[in-house]
Image (cartoon, rainbow, N blue to C red):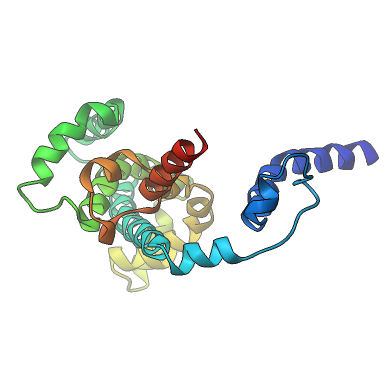
Length: 234
């Protein structure tokens, strides 16, 4: 038992030390931070001036808000479309079902770098560049196939009679989906939420399609900030 707890403690120390280091550096005054021989791990002063500058003298709140807005819109659209598609694939037999499933899988085989130029050619005439809506539509289009297969896997353990029983009680098919099946599969959807968080850190499309600060996202600004720090440090 002691060895198990010691192992867990060492793992947590290893995993959380970078986070501690980031927070410690962010609240350490500059004159102490670059002072030779100074213990910056445990010692040093304390200041909130850098954090206040980031929040008040920069556009960081705007970039952060844009990323959150993009993430929630993408999550809502992807969940809505994938839930309906997953329900259809797991409950019905129809012509072309296997072909459609193969096409959904086929879309995941293309690297993003290869299709960024065609996507730009499509989005520019529609006025969806420099727009969070354009990013939301792109992320939704790319993540719906994976989320659909995820929804099929979540719905398959539940027999078809679970929805039919609700329909016998007077529910429509749509009501049976969101009143019976969605609550049953909600824990699995929470566990598989990584498909949505990928949009938070996505950089390629944001970097290529957006160049206005009003709609800039957090990963793009963070990359530019890191390049500025690298130039400053030499």
